Image 1 (cartoon, rainbow, N blue to C red):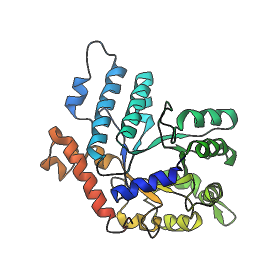
Image 2: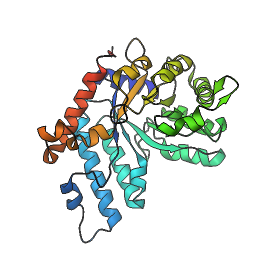
Image 3: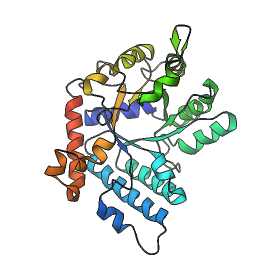
Image 4: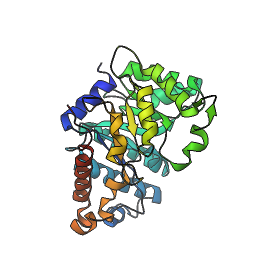
Length: 306
C-alpha cells in the first residue's frame, strides 16, 4: 500500500505545484443560477442547499483538477444541512478522487479511546478505493491530549492515509491558547514535538502532518526546523493575508513537504477584481481556474517543484 506522503508528493510533482484548493461552499456566495436550479418544490430547504453545494463543488473540482494536486473540502459547510449535506459531501469527495486528486477532508475531529477509533475508521479511507469516505487525509484536533492522536495514527498507517494535526492555526485568536508558555516552550511547540515524534521514521515524511498558518511566517520557519519529517498544510494564504514569501521556508530542496491552501480566493474569485470584470458570475468556473493559475504562478516565485 502506497504511503500518503508518497501519493501526495507524486501528485505535487505531476502538477508541479504545491497549491491546494479548499472547497468552502456558502449559500449566500454561490452563483445565483446554481442556487435557483436546486430549489425545486419536492426538495426541502436542506436538500436544496445540499444539492447546490454538490453541484458547485463538483464543477469547481472539474475546473481546478488539471491544475492542482489536491483539494480540501470543508465538512462544516455540508454538516450544517444535516443528512442531505453529508450525503452531498460524500459524493463530492468521491468526485475529487475520481478526478485523480488527493483529497484532504477538513473535519477537525478529535476525541479519546473508542470514540477516536470510530472517528478514524469512519473518516479515513486512505488508499482504500472502497471506503465509504474516500478521504486521503483528515484534519485532527489534538487539544484533548496526545492520546487522542494514537487511534488516528494507527488507522492512517494501516490504510495509507494521512493526518494533519492543528499545531499553529491561522486565525487571529489562536495565540490565546497556542502561545501559552510552559517554561520556555509554547503550547504549539509542545504539540509540534509530539507530531514530529509520531511522523519520524525511515521515510523522509511520515503520515502525520501539521496545520501551520501562512499568517505566521516566523513561527513557520521555527516549526519546519522542529518538524523535519512532517508534511505541512498551510491555510491563510490569499484572503487571510498570507503570501508566497510567508510560506517559502516550508519546502525542502525539491519543493516538497507542504501544500498551501486557498479557499475563498478561488471559490468565489468571480466576486472580486480583476476576475469580476474579466469573467463575471456567468463564467465563475473560468474565474476560479484563473485565480488558481495566479496562485500557482505566485508560489512558483518561491518554490520550484522538482
